[in-house]
Length: 105
Image (cartoon, rainbow, N blue to C red; front, side):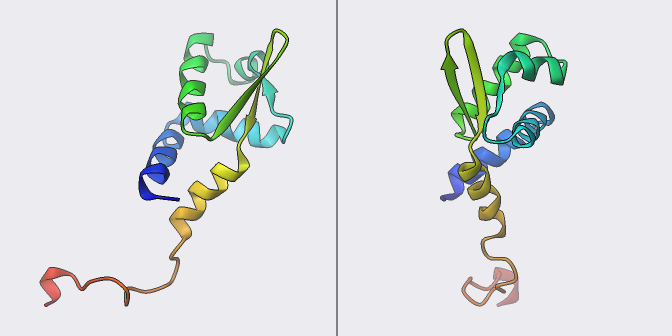
């Protein structure tokens, strides 16, 4: 994952409503939830939910499938995992592969 994609995913998740949506979808599992049920469980207006879902779908963190008149939202575990893994990618690796800070020279 490149830094721009990671930054976009983290920015999208940095909003309370969008984070609540993702956590609820993850809790629901691979089947996800219909938009109406998401709205009911979160207690947000339809237009607010649509706005936040658009951001999550655009960032690739949530997928939507239409089944007749029902639109079901599902978490994209691969993208969510990759975004969070990007933050941990170099955990505890030290700084030997990076240039020294300018003030340390």
